[in-house]
Image (tube, rainbow, N blue to C red):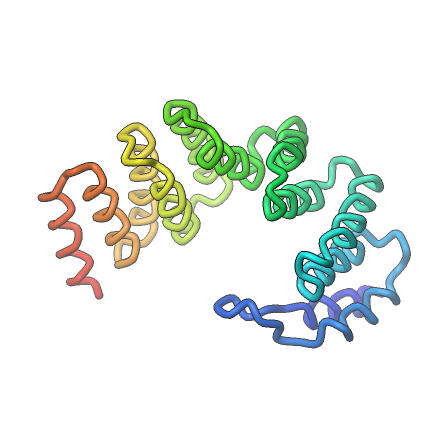
Length: 219
């Protein structure tokens, strides 16, 4: 059973750049069908299959499997977070937040759930101060759970700085994220460039120029 599950996930693998399947999704489903009916990992995999193969048309089936996994174990974070992501893709922010808050009620330090809450605030609410506070909480969680993941800090800084609307309070937090990425990997030219971009958003042209120059030296 374990071998079927692993082989199925291998068939579901996608290229991180193109997001195109690397295996045969149809063969993957055949493997998952051989797993035990109550196998939570296989249930999650079937949900992913319907998302990859069916696109928007496969969403109802994908949600059915996620709800099955949640019904089996209401504290299973991966199913709740995956459901939140699916709901975001459908524009159902209230249901996405419900799933995220359910995770946070069980673990107030969960990075995935905190990121969803921040994303909802950034896209749907005009509250820069509230967003900055929520991002600080996300930053603390990242620093605790993934302290040496430079790419995570960089990508999160980049994502939320673009939603900042040049708000200084929000950008102060995203700069902390970018600086954390550089503290982990001082030779990350992309992170230096990101920090320069954020300096530019704040109108700090001299600092931005200095960081762009540093990025050129690294690259």
